[in-house]
Amino acid sequence: MVWVPLLMNLAVVCGAPALARRIPYRVRPGVLTGTAAVAAVGWLWSLALLATSLAERLPSLGHRLDLPVPGPGRTAELPPAAVGACASAVVAIAVVTLVVATVRLARELARAERLVRRLPAGRVHVVAGELPDACAIGGVTGSRIMITTGLVDCLDAAERAAVLAHEQAHLAGRHHWLRLVVACCAATDPLLRRLPQLVEAACERWADERAAQPAGQRTVLARALGKAALATLRASGTAPRAHASATGSATKPDSMPDSMPDRELAPGFGAGPTACGFDRGAVPERMAALLAGPPRATGSPAWLLMSTVVTALVLGSCVHASTDFLTLLRWY
Image 1 (cartoon, rainbow, N blue to C red):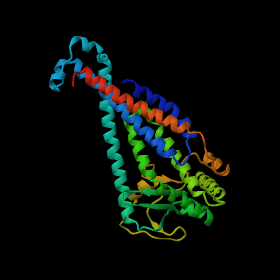
Image 2 (spheres, one colour):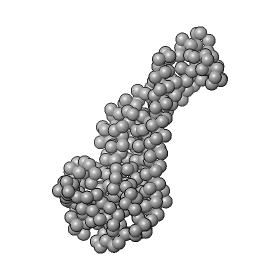
Image 3 (tube, rainbow, N blue to C red):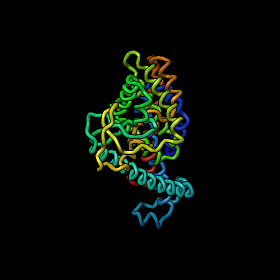
Image 4 (cartoon, one colour):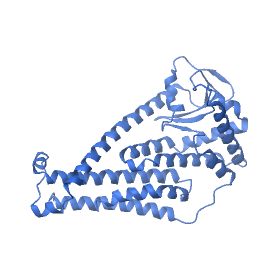
C-alpha cells in the first residue's frame, strides 16, 4: 500500500486537466487546491516510510536512530535498499525545496502586507505605467486593488468597472491563499508542477463569472479582456515597467508618497502568488467562455465522486502503509 499514494500522484497529474474541465467553476479552485494538498502529503509520507526502511536495513544507522533491528525474515519483507536510498534522497530534496519555497513565499506575503498597510483602504490605487494591467494584492490583514494608467486609458468607464469587479472577486475568493498553498505543494512534489497553472486558470474563471453576473456584463468584461490584451501586445515592446509614481482613484491619479519605494510594487505587478492579475494568460478561452453565456448547472456528481475516491485512496493507503510498516518494524 505504500506505493498507492505515489501512483495516485500520477493519476492526479494525468487526470487534473480533465477534472478541471468538469468541475463547476464555483468549487474548481478549492477542489484543485485540496487535491494538490492531499497528493503532496501522500507523496511525502510514502517516501518517508520508504526512507525509514533503509534505516532498518542498516543496523548501525538503526542503532544510532534508536530503531529496532528486524530479524532476517522481516528484513526480506522490507523494500530493497536501493529503493530506500532513492526515497531518502528524494525526501531530503523535497524538504529543502519546500523550505526554500516557503521562505520565498513568506517574503512575498510580507512585502504584500507592507504594501497593503501603506496604501489607504477603500480606494483603487492607480500606478503610472503604459502597460495595461490590474491586480488584486492580498496580504494577511487586508488587500488592495491596483491598476495602471495604461489600462485606465484603454478602457471606457463600463469596462473599468467590470475589471474592478473582477479584481474584487479575487479578493472575495481569497485566491492568493489558494495560490500560496498550491505553490508549496508543487515545490514538495515535482509531479504537481502543472497544478499552479490549473489553479490560476480556475481562479480567473471564477472571478470572471462573479464579475459577469449582472445583466450585460459578460460582453463588457470580454471586451475589456480583448482590449487589454491588444493594448499589451502594442505596448510590450516599448513600455517601461509600472512604477510607484501615482495613486488615487481609477480616473484621476494623485501623487504617491515618497516613502513608497518602487520595489514594494513587486508583489503587485510581478508573477507572485499574492497578486491576482487581470489578463495573464488564456485570454481567448476566457473571452469565449464569457461570450458563450452563463455556465449550465451540472447535475452529474462525477467530479465529486472522483475527488472523494482520490482522497480516500491516498489517505487510506497512507494509514494502511504506516500500520504495515510499524508492525513490520515491531514498533507495537
